[in-house]
Length: 190
Image 1 (cartoon, helix red, strand yellow):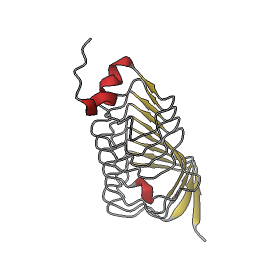
Image 2 (image 1 turned 30 degrees about the horizontal axis):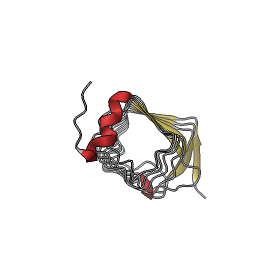
Image 3 (image 1 turned 60 degrees about the vertical axis):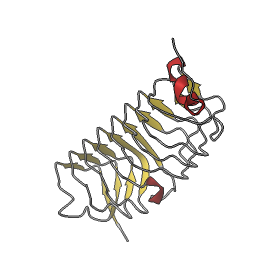
Image 4 (image 1 turned 45 degrees about the horizontal axis):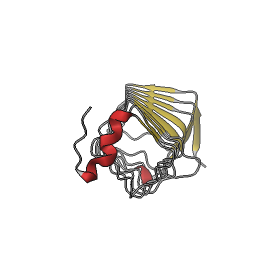
């Protein structure tokens, strides 16, 4: 039986040198912790918050994230598709997720606020009703992605092929139209 840890704050800890104990973590806060190049596989996080943490290149295979929020975290190179999809629910605020992957995931209603999603792979992902608020999507990959009702009205640097993705009722600002028309090599002026 795995341990159960609730209502605990972990502050300034280095989990590169020592592993976070295997447990079910509920309502815990991880603040200014370094998990980079480490292991968070087979963990269970419920209603937890990660604040100012470095999770770059961490192994998150089979990990459960239920109602987890990430704030100002560095999360470069994560393979979220390796997580346990059961009850998956997370949000990202001011995070750097460069070169991470969400391939073939069901992420309805996902929130990215003021994030850097540079080179992130969303191939065959369900992002219906997702919100990309003030988010940089430079070189993000959208292929056979469900973006129905997704909100890109304040997102920038994206290139999305309307023929290769579902965009029904997605929201875009007029300034974002070049990102939808890039494949046509048009010159759009104002």
